[in-house]
Length: 400
Image (cartoon, rainbow, N blue to C red; front, side):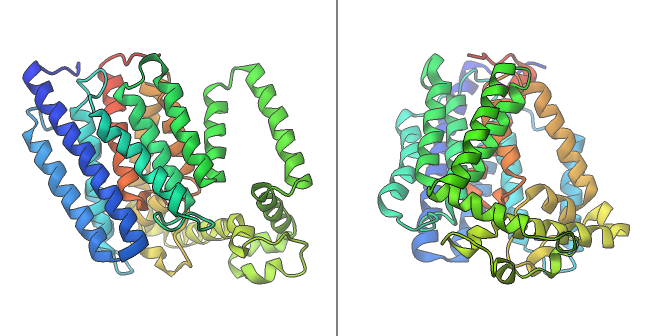
């Protein structure tokens, strides 16, 4: 199968993509204002509903065949079942959110006839600069929580818009370099350590046969260790505190993570003056993950099939900070396996393209964050993913 479209279809699709891009800009600004001014769950619900209605509208205007894979149908059925049988009170807004992600992914598939997506340059410019400038000039909170839930969500938007910029083809042969500049501007403003580590890991994985790069990475790792223990830079002080906390735990503590108190663990330790949450962010992630796996295997006789149900981990002090474990535990092994098989196909079709640096970074970042909760950025990501995946599957995407 080859992904092609006639001129009339391309003209209609181009118009729809610009409308879609403008809509993404609108819901992004709305979500940012809701986070800083309104903080209203009704506004979030309206965003989800309008997104689904809008995508269904542009989806139906497309003349492309409407076909869904058997895996997607199976995935959808088991997801719905997990909401119905939920032991806790299921959050059906999540079902609406996931439906939106699925729709934008398949909308990206419908756009795969383009060698490069044609997006209005002014809309694209606003998508890149509005969140960046608002946070840079007006958000002076330590973790960038004025317009976004935290700096991790802000930099997640940054890498998603960098990926979107790359597939639009703006910048010609230099579009990859410009995409990197966009990403690093968001990293500089958001100062998120997690996504930087994920990006470095993606570089090493993709270039794992490059001996010089591996040696250079080891040198930089050594420099990072020295900076961690012998400088007063806040980022490295945070790392030093994390290492101090983790190294203070005994084997018994590791075997009983659920019984640990984040406050008591830090007592009598020589820590730098940083937030207590920062000092234990790695530890409470491990604690949450241990709890998730314990609950999953405790109820193995049904959790493997349909999961523990949506909303099961509301009893935690916060989200699990691992989207893969969350999917496995709440929606079951079948849904989890379908996602793993699709990721394997993703590696097959796009691993030779430079967009894979951004995609792999985001996939790695899912291991430590709650990215499925970040709606506008995830819509942008799944749309880009749908386009890249099917374009590379049905065509040969120019790799420059």
